[in-house]
Each structure stands twice: as structure tokens, then as C-alpha cells.
Image (cartoon, rainbow, N blue to C red; front, side, top):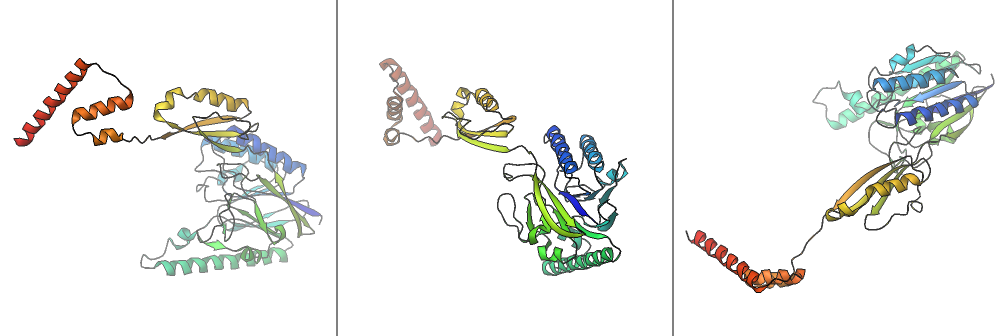
Length: 387
């Protein structure tokens, strides 16, 4: 056997509402990178779609998979965002190389010029799936222990699959969409206790030469790259500032030797926050060509008509942004009564204090009409109270 080269990508999140043309172009670029690297196998570890797929999304995904399968065989694992049945249709595509879909735990055996591989699939599972059939009388602690026991039993089965693969001269590869305890998100948060978790050591203990993981959008790895999250292929929110791409994995004579991260030209998503009373210098704000910008400005309601939102948007586009979303945050103005008004003893005195505070001057006849009107109102109120 020679060096086996594997492309591992994950969390593609194809979504018609999220710049589908961008998605198609970016993943066409990824296929070109995988072809240039002369990969023998591609692993897609879940969340191919963002939600239940639409016809446009299925067409886009079919086109991508046909391009990818023209380079090498493809193994797909179902993720938590992939709706039931959404992926199975892609196993029926007419392609040069096989496309295998794993929406339940199974083993996909795939032949490559660099050796036969047994991809041990572990689609998304969580505590809710594992305990759904339990009696309602089972308490939280019991359900937790049963879920852990089920996960351990599943790992035991996978170890048996890996051993069988080696015994029949197949290279065992793990592909799963799951939660690894202690994994770090794009915002730096370390996730612990969110669902049924496995440790990197648990996954390595299965006995596979490489463990391809999906679910967390930040690429990261353990044991020298032998267990790895590929992250997502493109940015879906402002928190995902890290590089996006896929892992190029090398196995020499069936043994893991190296991996490197191949970056994709994913658009940056930039959030600009500004006080609308000041002028924004979009260049100093760090806008780069191709950015997707959300401009969030804080403004008082009575200033909205004076703010040139179209002009600001045009300036950001001129700086090279691909698109701009404008978001106004209306600041509530807190008004306080002048001390002179509060301390005035009667209604007319309060009116006089208010007029002075506003710099409004009125002639004596107008003032007398106001005084008479106030007196009439006060008389009527006293009569109503007495009645």
C-alpha cells in the first residue's frame, strides 16, 4: 500500500436563505482543492443541511456531491441538523465513485487505489434518543446512567468493527457526528455536560487509524491530529472568526502519519457597532473586500430622520463589502422635569417655569387666557371630587 490521502470536511450547512450562490462557489473550490491533493477518500461528517432541505438546497448538494465523487469515493454521516431521510437520496446519484450515506451506525467498505477502507459510521445521537423508550418512572439519574451505558455499549460494538476490519485487511476509519467533552467552540467556550459525551481517548480506543468528527464548528484535534473536528466549511454567524476549511489526512501503509488543515476562502462576517451621532470610518473599522457586514447603530428616535442610512451603507460597500445589513438600535431618551417645575406651587406657576425652561416667551393676554383655562379646569375637578 502507498500513502492513503483522506479529505475530511464537516458541517456544510447548505441553506437557501444563507447565500446559496456563495455556498455553491465555496464548495466548488473545495472540490478543486481535494482534486489537487489527489485524495483517495472524502469523509463528510454531518450537518450537510442547515434544516430540512428545500429543492434548491438538494439540487445544490447533489451538484457538489457529483463533483466530489468524480474525484474519489465519498462517505457521509448524518448530523443533528440533517432531517430524517434527507441524505439517503444522494446514495442514488449517478457518480464515478461511490457515495455512501450512514444515517444509522454501520460500516461502509470502500475500495481506493491506496488501500481498502472500512468507514465506521456514528451518526448523531444524544441522551433524548437513547432514553426515549424508557418508562416515565425512570428518574433523571437513572436515565443518565442508562444513556452512558448505551454509549459505552455502542463503542464496544465499534471496537469489534475496527478489529474485524483489520482482520480482513481493511483500514478502519471512524466517522462520527457527536459531542466530545472539553471541545472548544468558536467563541472559546468549552462545552461540558450538554449531551451524551465521549472523550477523545474513548474515540481513539475504538482502534481506528483516524477519527473524523463533526458537530463543533471550530477545527481542533487531539493525539497529534489522529482524532479531529474539521469545523465548518463556511461562516454562519459573527462568532465564527476562525479559519474555515478541511483536514488533509495522510496514512502510510495504513498507519496515520500526518494531517494538515487546508483553508477555504470563506467570507468573513463582520459586525460594526457605531454611535450614529459620530461619523464611521469604514476603513479604520477593518472592512475588507468580500466581507458580509452588519452595521448596528445606536440612535435616538428623534434623530432617525437625520441619519443617512443609505449613505453609510454605500460607504461600506465602497470599502469592498459584499453585502451590508443595517440594524438600528433605538435608544430611549430619559426626560427629567426641571427643578423649578417640580417646586412650583400651583398650575400657572408650573406653566411659567416650563416656558422659561424652554425659552418660550408669550404676551400677557395669552398668559391670562392660559391662567383662566387652568382655573376653570381646577374648579371642575374640585366639583367632581365633591360630588
